[in-house]
Image 1 (cartoon, protein in one colour):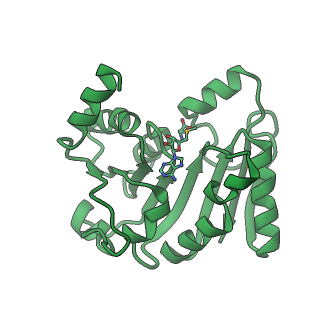
Image 2 (tube, protein in one colour):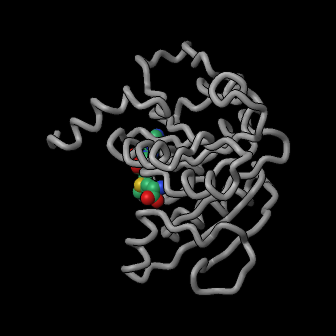
Image 3 (cartoon, helix red, strand yellow):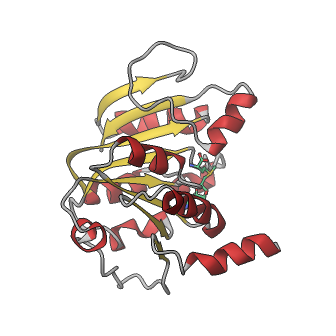
Length: 220
Ligand SMILES: C[S@@+](CC[C@H](N)C(=O)[O-])C[C@H]1O[C@@H](n2cnc3c(N)ncnc32)[C@H](O)[C@@H]1O
């Protein structure tokens, strides 16, 4: 591992706004499960997750815009989370935490109906069909989100991958889910979906490569 990455990994566990993967066993659940707002944030505000958050661009910006909502950025990559966590501390964002876990285990960290909304920002599209289950909008993942989301809670997907976008649309159609909004070209068409102006690290790179950005918000 590169020296800089390694030192960020080592620093991560000392950051007060980061909760790290412990030795994972399928039967162990996080002590925060079911008590995030009360025990972690010390309030009863709504709770929003950003999955595949990387450096947490949506988490950080939404937290500034909505100081009365709690945000948790979730990713497995420690050096990326380190960036977001340090930025949140620098900006004194008390409504932000980062959680370093595999999203596959999300139900061990959040309990039934604990989460108000989920953002999924530029997840890996896993184009190989054999890896379909790894896509963060596959039926397997949607089942997990359904468990932790409150009734009526939304999943918001922003992606540059037409394959992942249309795969998600098929899942939505197969499962007869409600679409709240859908934009086929976020930066090149007229729409009134809020917070689409927030650009993530990967999104900026995709825009430099003139890629189209897709968005869909739905209720799983
Ligand atoms: C392409 S990056 C996007 C990062 C960020 N959202 C952005 O737009 O800049 C995808 C991220 O998803 C994370 N990821 C993918 N599958 C994951 C999983 N099952 N559990 C945790 N993190 C995952 C990767 O670690 C990576 O940081």
